[in-house]
Length: 405
Image 1 (cartoon, rainbow, N blue to C red):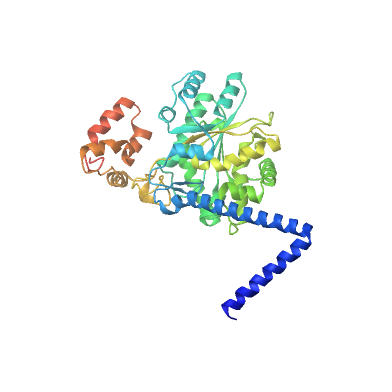
Image 2: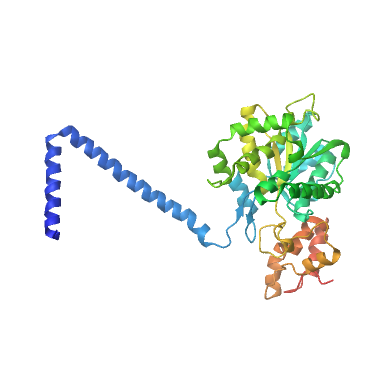
């Protein structure tokens, strides 16, 4: 058909539609409303697409963008202030640290004083309870993905030991050997074996054996613990799990149920043998900040189940030695120092750690506190702040490894 014929036919059709609408006022009103609605939807969609491009463009183009989830931490240098805003937790301030010292009659742990543990949820409420003489307990855990714990894994356990001693409270430690089967595809027996090996490192931290309960998911989930697990799972919709963890349609049902496994120990009624008289004692959970989504979801369902929301005190990440990731990770043995490493292997890894490598002394001084070797000293080995500043500056020569002997 010729172009002119098409245009003529289109014009005739428009004229016929106009005639019908003019003859039927009610039909014309309906048509006008529909046309206006369609234009508005197109405008909103266009605006939405623009907004989406504004927010997604940096993530798709910037190699420095950070990702913090329970299963993945990526980013050259993690912006922990940004994580606080993203997760909606609160920063630990000096008055809160002073209050901890006053109530425990001891100096705060170095991890607290230096901001290694830097964020919290309801820590102030736990301190309120303690000040009134009411009970609480500690809950932490470990997903056994390696033969031994590395320094990053030790941070919550060393801090939990301090909390147990300072507040004289019970502690439960969950070994989530099921987690490694679900997420890392380890076979069941290997997951159990790694769990037993990891417990050796955990025990070595020196917890009060008479006031500590260590259990594995495979061996212990049943009875009251399983009852609470089912109650929690029944409160979590698929949509809620998807929005919290970013699950997709390809995720197994085991991954969908696992958050409830980790949530159940947050409630004291899961342990009638430990808390026989009182069934609603709150817990304080020391953990790395990447675990926050689990317990944010737990706190959401607590009120529906008439439980007290668990409180959290959350730590920063110990950087990977090679500076190529957000934290030390069991998936990269060269990024970490393990409890079972030989002295020679530790020395080799420390010497090859990133120390800045700037072209001149002034630039090197500007970034010295961000180097991975310094972070290990800062987190663990130099307790005195004056000493760490003076010693580090004398050790940190421009463009050379941090430690040479």
